[in-house]
Each structure stands twice: as structure tokens, then as C-alpha cells.
Amino acid sequence: TWHSEQTSYELNHAYQNNLREECSEPVSHGYMPAPKSSLERRFNKSTYTAGVGLRHTLDKHELRGGVSSEYQYNRRSGWGFIIPDFKTLSVGGYVMDRYTITDNFIVNAGLRYDHVHTHIHNYQDWFKTPVGTDSIYKERSADFRGNFNSLTWSAGVNYSTGLWVLKANIGKSFRVPIPKELGADGINYHIFRYERGNAKLDPEESYQVDATVLWCNDALEVQVEPYLNYFPNYIYLNPTAQYVEGLQLYNYRQAEVLRWGLEAQLNWKLDDHWQVHAQGEYLYARQQSGEKKGYTLPFSTPWSVDTGLKYTFDSKGKDFVGLSAHIVGTQNEIVPPEKPTDGYFTLNLSAGKEFQLGSSKLNLTLHADNLLDRRYYDHTSYYRLIDVPEPGRNISLMIGWEF
Picture 1 (cartoon, rainbow, N blue to C red):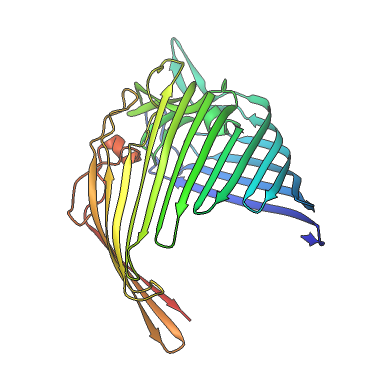
Picture 2 (picture 1 turned 90 degrees about the vertical axis):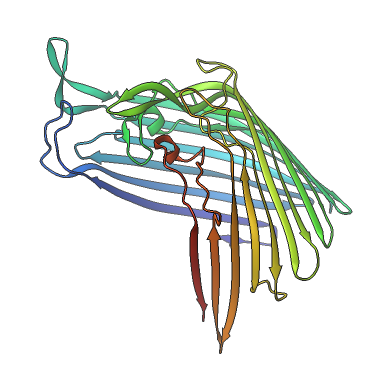
């Protein structure tokens, strides 16, 4: 990083390696003979990133620009398969301007261009599968090379007056399908399902509008954030009624999607000790095209509200006790053969205490969740697929020592 009075430059470079191995009992399965080792899957992924950025202040303008790049490659091994070897290279550049008209009125705008190249390698099973009167090495992933380009933009405004703060943004975003979405074909043991990619996926685009309305004084703060998204080609994992190797099959698909929602929160300081807080969210989504037209998106979150009362014994808020409720609505907006999920509410307790031990501090925090020991399901949880409920009464103690 280099700075001057009006200009700064930033250069960064990073490398990351992720090595993952999954082992299981080497037994025969279907047409696959018993393997010689317990190594079912091994993923060795390396990621290189580099970027340079420039910030320049010119009168009331704060100008930013830069370029960034990322190279990623993955090599697999083991007798099991879910995703193939792949390489991706992405390069992008951006410019943006933050213009301060007055101290309480700021506008901003930006533009970005991205190019992404993806290469997915061919993979065939190491054992033969009977097909008709012959036996073949079944292809699980075809060789794929794709180039994706996109120009995205955004603009926003920030205005404050008195006790009010108003924000609004509009823009277009872009997301390239990842190798898993393009070439997966196997069991995802962590989510209890069989996933199959789609090499015909196009880049996902989104046009969004969002706003923030905030009102606050010394005791009360209220914030509301509505948003709207339109996706010409949203990428999602589509549940089917088929089963492969004993698990439900999910295919990656694209559809035109309209999605909107609202988030709101309230914080009220009753006096020096008592505080009330509440927050909630609601999401609506509809597929406008494709085989599931008229339905929502899989695993859509139901509406939810969190509210609570907290008492602090000191001005620092280190010594406290609080009671909160988590309320979730029934989710009947599903994508067949997805299951509806009943609503629920949980009652939770928290407390904290700080002890001064000479020059050190000992902090104790107690959490007691689901005090009523209710049995419920989280609609967005992977465990919902196999009818496993969320944890019952759960008590934990966290100990922290500052020295």
C-alpha cells in the first residue's frame, strides 16, 4: 500500500490451498467392485488471487478503480466421484465514484467488467457398467470449456436529515456458474442428496433495487429495508421425484425469477438498564418460467421474528440477563416434492458476568436455548430432508479470559 495526500495505491497477492479427504469402508456397491483403499474422495484445490486498486480524491469526488484476477484449479482422486477436475481463470476491472454533494447528501455509481474462463475435465468411472448388451466405462462428466463475459453497474444515494437516514440503490449483478453446478454427478453425503450438474447453464444475472429507511433518537431506533430482485436466469438446485443410489436426485436448473422481501428491526432503550429489541424478515419468490413455473424457489425461508428483553447491571453492558423469543411461520410455499414445514417458536435465555481479577478479566456468558424443549424442524436445514428435528433444550457456557 502507498499513500499520498490525495492518492493511494494498493497491491495484493494471495495463495490458498485446500486439501480434503473423505474415507469410508471399501465395499462393493452396485456395479462397482470393492476398492483397494478406504480413500473415497480427495480434493486438492489451489487458488491464486492478485489485484491492484487506486483511490484518488478530487474535490468532492472520491474516485476508485482497479483490476483483479483469480486462478483456481482442483485435482480429485479416490474411488468415489461428485465433481471433476477443473480450472477457472477470472479477470475483472472496475471504476466507481462517490460524490459528496453536501455533508448529508451523497451519491455513488460504479461500473465493472468481468471475463471468466472455465475448463472442466472429462471423467469416466474406473469400473464398467452394463448398458444393453455391452459394458462401458460410464461418463460422469464431459469435457467442457466455456467463456463468460459481463458488464455490471450500480448507483446509489444516501441522504440524512434530522433524525432520518434514507438510502437507495439500483444495480445489475452477475455470477458465473461454478464447476459444481456445471459438472457434479454424485452423492453429497453432507446434505443427504444426489446432485447432478448442467453444462448448459448460462451466467446468472440479477437486477436489484433496495432501500433503507432509518429513524433514530437517543432512545429508539427503527429501520426498514425493502428489496426487489429480478433474475432472467436464476441458477438453483431443483428437487425431483427420482432417486439415485437411494437418495433424492437434485438437478441444477435455470429459471426466470422474481423475488422481493422486507427486513425490519427495532431497538428501544427504556432506561439505563432495560432494553427491548425486535427484528423480522419476509421473503417472497416466484419462478416465472421453466418446469416449475408458478412455484417459489426450493428451501425458501418462511417469515420470522426475533424479539427480546434485556437488563444490564452496569453501563458497559458486561453484566446482563436477557430473555428472547424466536418465532418462525409455517412454510407452505414449496417446490414439489419438497415437504411443507410447520411454524414454531423457541424461548431462549442469556446471561453474562465480568469479573475483574487484578489486571485480567474473566468473562462468563451463559446461553440456554429452546427452554421449553420444543420439537421443531428448520425448513432450510439439510436435516429436514431426512426428518431430523433441530436440537432440543441446549445449555452452553462460554468462558473468556482477557490478560
